[in-house]
Image (spheres, rainbow over the protein chains, first blue to last red):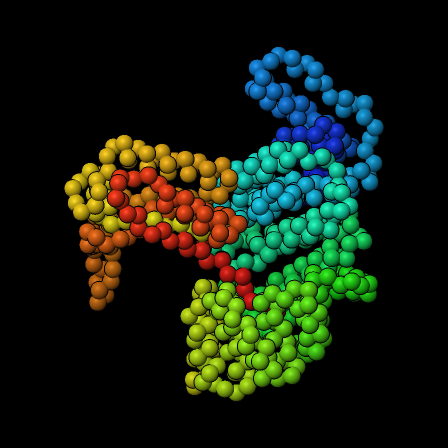
Length: 410
Length: 136
């Protein structure tokens, strides 16, 4: 078996094996360690000795054995007692798990990783390990922190889950909506992390986007009736489709309007568009679906000039109603300017200047500069570009803004 | 999100810690031990929470070597700072959920024990440059 195929298989099986173990024996924290060790054993043995007939059963058996060992030594450490022989696990007497139990288990794990007691960064780390099947050093590399730091974060998160005594089942119906929101947010955070521009760009960040899409696809398969899950998956696909065109050879960011659209991933676009069209047909339409719909309009335009701005304005108007955050209102103003003209966009920017966080950043100034330039007010636009450049913290962006300012002076 | 929590201090601060007489209150060995214990405990706490990326204390400013270009010539100066000039003395690089948590850590650092009458220079928190790109 090829390394890549083996890795894919193991990572697909990881949450199923963990779910099966926790369902039978509890001990989420120790079971998670046992599964990681079983996966390591498989990665080492299978290429040499051949893949077992039922890889999942093999992993469950090995992980259960390992769990017994771990529990034994834990218990010995804790109690210094020799009465460990009572720890016999009836793994051979249990009926085989059905496919639907696997699905439920993975879903329970997903909700578990988004336990309200955990901080967002812990939720992300734990989900990547427990459901994504990534090793701690891979997660640490992707987030650019030392492996020891990530190991501590994960073990603390597991300890918190253990301390909460959460039963291994889906959250009660009354909490489902809130808990699902937390799951979606966690998945979105993983995806977003891949798109955060840093001074030390890392190839591993792209893998995070792929992983976020894989996990969201899994969530969508498990919760096909939840339209916001489909919306989030569509949003990720439609955004990630543009990744090959987002950066120039020398690492500079290329704005949407200037991207070479022939580089966009058409498979991802058609999948995303199909997903979003299906769910948009049945209201209510949530914020992830609206953002995906906006992304779809951009992706479907053959060129920046062909963008269907009136439709984008309509979508932003719906989005502002559910999510009136400054960034959404800023984007709404841009869309309005594209349809009605720069004056209308500038008018919408006025009340945003009162927002403290927005006022301190470069974005508001960059947008205002852009709209003033559209309006033909070169002097004011130049000043706003300069101000935006002064406030920007990203060297490539500052360079871009300075170039725009200089362009207006000639 | 990553933040650098920055401690500053002058050569005078370092000297007062080393027991030398100057305008600042002198640290006794017990006070130094209490400070180290406090810092070790904080580091262990940050480590156990999975928040510590790195943390270092820097040697005294007098050991600084400055390298610069002057009219195309490389000029090297040892100990370029005035005694009272506050410079980087140490830092923690933490990966936490937001600036509020970083602020909490910094506020805790300010409660570090020290000699009577000692004033702590302010602590600065600088976000590591991680700007999300503009995208419609």
